[in-house]
Image 1 (cartoon, rainbow, N blue to C red):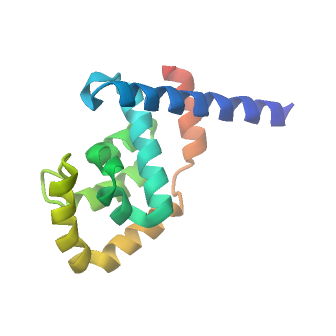
Image 2: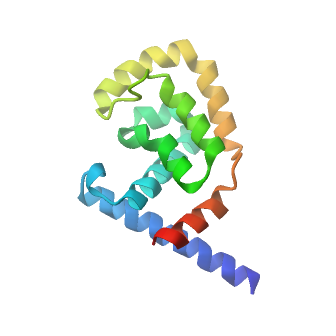
Image 3: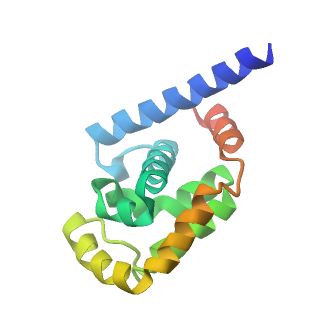
Length: 145
């Protein structure tokens, strides 16, 4: 019984992620609903940071919405992960990372050289998952979808 409940919960989360990403593909970020912005951002950040770190997130097109990372993690209650994401965002200054990829990459190249060790530390902290993101996502999805 418990296994069936876990499978259903995972399917609900995956469906909500998929719906959010479809909306993001068809509309501008600011034109989709808040809960879709939250899930699309979390999906993008997790995928990129787990694959190649914050450096990869900011370098790739997923970085176009990275400015929203801390807010998205806070929205689901993952406050530790929000704090880690905010530290990475802060490397770009008070405005955070530009939405434009070319501008972001130009800044990133100077940041990466100066702060490579710091970014690696943030990557490690993030991938240790200091918050129970699966449970937080489930609660968020159940409340918003």
